[in-house]
Length: 584
Ligand SMILES: [Zn+2]
Image (cartoon, rainbow, N blue to C red):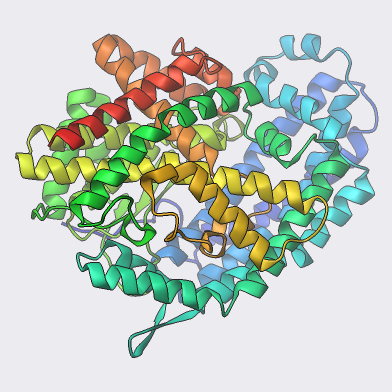
């Protein structure tokens, strides 16, 4: 079976006529739109026509730009030495400041429209885009002057973006002294999963030692980026960087607070799991950080790519034929690049190619159960894209917290199926792998949330020293992991290796993971309760993700995101797995 994807539907090559034409088209569209906003967004006459025309052009630009960018990125991700692909991505990125200016002009103009409801009601296209239009108006209050906006857009390339690139270069070129070798950080961090206890411990010690070589520069990058965030958030009139993040994520503070309250309540159950794991691995008391990912039990569950396909399609079909057919079609028509090979990036991702109403999935399949659930996860993202394919480009962009819903849902389907067919020994391993993942998504994510909160609080006044950063990381880990982890063997340098802290546009890129997991678990519980009545509602929910606030998306399923009990009921599912694991 062919394990490489086919991208011909996007373009057949970087030299093909269609690609050249699309670049010309984008150039023209951006120039025309710039002229259009400059001449038309000066008064509020004919607002309906102007608004319609603007949305139509914006949809066209988005479609065209993402097609060009995605072709570059997809090609690059399986062939990282491809200079042409990289150049194409950079060429598309160079359009972004121009698009920012267009957006700012639009948002300012729309903030001056008083009778917006009336205008929207008079047009089908506008009604379809009501959410986007209204949220643009809502967000316009955070805009600065045109000159300031332009300056910020340009200065970010030499500011936060440059610092983020530096951090990336510093960590990706860091070599760790391990025995007689010098190894990259990614290799060393992977040893955390090794069956050898000695290797895990040594790798952890070597990793921490290596950060001493880069901690000053990492701290400088982090201080610069977070300092810029603090300044910009304040200038724009947000209460705090967290407030700015929540607005961007279309999520309210009440939802976050309800979820965090429930998480705090359930931490002790995770601590029990960690202590049990410590015992299984021969430790007295709590687990040392370096054994968080240690494998427990030895069973050989391996799958060929064909077997993975059959397993996924069969179990997806038991949920719904639509989902099963979707996955089957993705395998059949080579939407998946699963073959591990040199020059390909690590991990896995799914790219929803709205412009061609399809998706492509990149993975590194080596036959483990984890690889099968990863494929199921990415196919879940693909299915989400499929539910959005008939929406316009502007209506198919969903916010961070919702992004992991469909993926974790599909992962749960496959994980449960694997559990059902497993022997006791296999079940133990499957359960442990699953809980280990949940522990990361809930407990570790909670520690990152605490760390980032403390970091922003202190950064308001001054830069933080390396020692201060280590200190607040340790405090965060102690609070989140409680007595589950050995307080003398934590990881004070986590802020060096997680890239999320260095994304200017994605602060607090932690709670969305917890949200995704708990929302998906809650949905799965609903599915078990509702049976087939769940299916149409689920599709409707996914269709609505691009044009609603998070709270309203959950409302579709009659879930109140402000209700702590909903989050408790999701955590209860994880707790039951923990109990089952403890019993086994
Ligand atoms: Zn995902």
